[in-house]
Length: 112
Length: 112
Length: 112
Length: 112
Image (cartoon, rainbow over all chains, first blue to last red; front, side, top):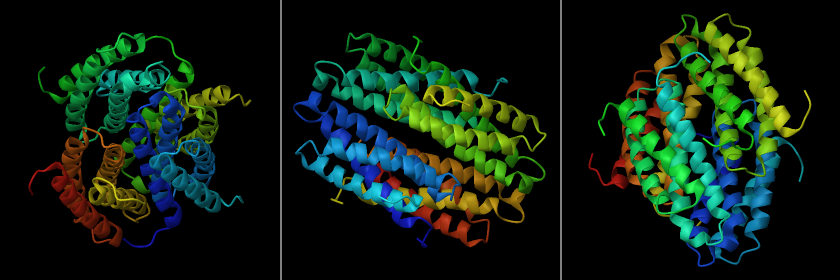
């Protein structure tokens, strides 16, 4: 595919969205699901906003930057929650979320 | 709002989507979340497809009927899972899913 | 359906999303589509964010308020663009957008 | 990111979704937008269903296969429409759609 505007940020969002969807599903398969309830909640919200951000960036929406700025906050919240759990899917998700947050802030032109 | 094509089906989908999103969230707050894992899974999938179907119908997409036909199957699966649980949010969700399935089949021109 | 948190805002978002999807489609059927290009663009973005906001509110997400605050800005932008055109679908869409913006601001606790 | 189930199909869908979002936006910038109206319509629908399919596959939904089977039809329709236009964004989109359709059919276990 030809290079696209925002491509780094888009890829970080796509990776993050998939990590969140996968983490939520894997959390539902854990033995102590109750402990994972907040993780599943933040995963869902973060994934939803990732898909939204990617859709807007792909069409070079004027609202891409503001959406990414908001997404960065969801990513940080999701990462903080995921980091509280030792499972690999949570750790992977936290990494993807932190990376996505950084790319989103850079894209939105707001510093860390 | 002015009357729209597919309006009955759209309203049933919107009601179903909200019921599924709410049910998934309420399931995460139950004491035995593990027992609710499959319910949360079908809720998520059914909600996702409801939002998709509503978006397509709202823009009178050529693929509205096929999407509704697929959605009817997700609704039935979600209703069957929800009916296994006594909580009010599950029972409400099952009702919304059954109604949505019926409207989707009618919209798609396939009999029950 | 039982009363839900944020129900006024959810309903305004759903009405707005449908109006935007419909307006974009109707714009594509106008004789001078080129003049409608920006209207179609803002319609798409506004609809996308409406669906996102409704999904988050339906599950009582912690990020509902921030999402609605952002959505209010998209709604205002979309309304301003729609108001530049005389077609009924644009006028209806502008009305739905203004109403959604007001409900979103109230829900987010930010004044007009 | 670690390898995931359906990863080839997910990547084809992501590429297709982005190509469709981009093509729709680029079509809106063409001098004869009216000629592109159907292209914009199929782009929108195809993109919407791509995002849905990716969300479902990422969470290993039981309805992934059926969604991909439906998506394959949207992809073919979008590719056929795009192929009628000479612009690079249409040609690129057609290629992404054909590839996505093939991956979706393979994932769904239905032959070409």
